[in-house]
Length: 346
Image 1 (cartoon, rainbow, N blue to C red):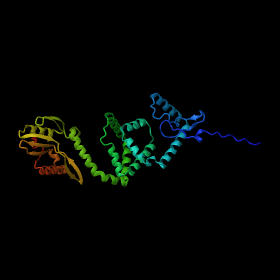
Image 2: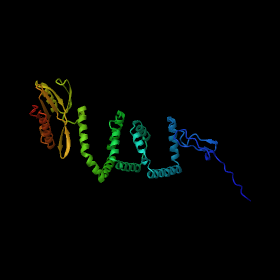
Image 3: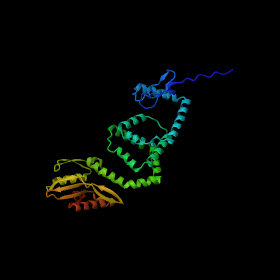
Image 4: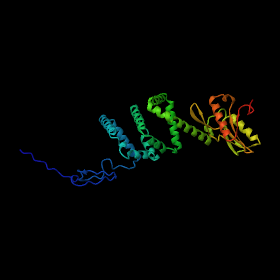
């Protein structure tokens, strides 16, 4: 008995141009055989750009957690994730023209970064995952050109963070260093980095410029807010009548120096840590800010450094004082060091 050949049904998708997805992704939709019409969206594209309510998010989260508890779903998810990972390694989308630039532009937007941060908040990652991420990031930064690195650094320069963000960063940093195991991990990772000859060479090459930049930033910070600088003994504000403003002192010696200058009639006014002087110590560049620049009534100027006697024997202090004296001579100023004898403490 001969078998009857089944009649093949022709669908519009075989001879018509399908319409595009309504989410404006530019992809064509498929023919819905059940409803006998074209789909409006590609699968999962109907919710693109939709704002989910908290209840909807909770329902989705609960359903996902429930599904992941089933062994067959979990196994399938892990297999798909591994396939996707291999596919990403073989065909890295970042290597496509324009993709990396688009990604860097998106990461430069504070709103985008905030959204990404909120999405990853509370996510628990395994040690293995963290290790993979760390290795991938190190590899990524090694392959970046100097121009790309500079561009990435500039993209966040001058960015203002909110008080809440700064507080959260501080808390997270403190938590890391409170835990001994975390400190050990950081120590091991830093040691591994410095064992790499290329990384060591790169860091040593950038070290002088980096120190110079940090030193300059520290002096600017002290000028803006003297409280940020370290000091010996007590510190606080002193109201200067000659300058008609409050001056910050970082030691009892500086306070005595201010009081002496206030009593001298030949002093017109004086400035506190208003200069930045460069000097070299142990083959590296440093900066220092002299304590006082005094202007007298006859318009002569004097550079004064307030130091206790026990610090005058320090090797770096000697070089620092020589740099101050040379700077004063170059500008036809006087230079003096005020210790216990000059302050009347002996």
